[in-house]
Amino acid sequence: MAEKKKTEMEFEAAMKRIDEISLRLEDSSLTLDESLALYEEGVSLVRVCRKKLEEAEQKITCLYPDENGVMEEKPFEAEGE
Image (cartoon, rainbow, N blue to C red; front, side, top):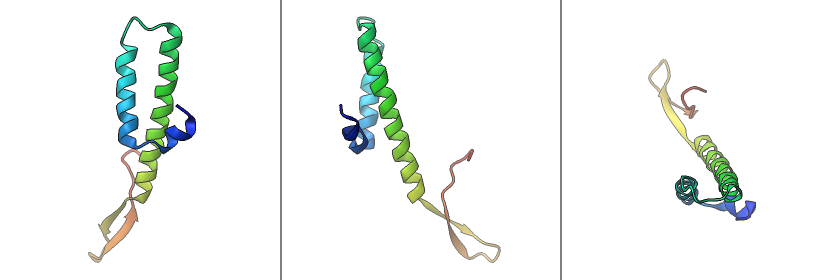
């Protein structure tokens, strides 16, 4: 799969492909080269998914009350950031 196609892939499709890859990697009949190619594809897809999640987080805003109880819009911050 070309890199450009991977970046355009839907998040859910990428996750499904990652699941398929992980199942295939459990198959002991794969050659080392096949396993390595699948692993590299999986790593690439994980990067695509991570990027899509980061982009989604940047679009999300949360409403928080200020000291007067007025709701303010602030960017989303994931736990641990």
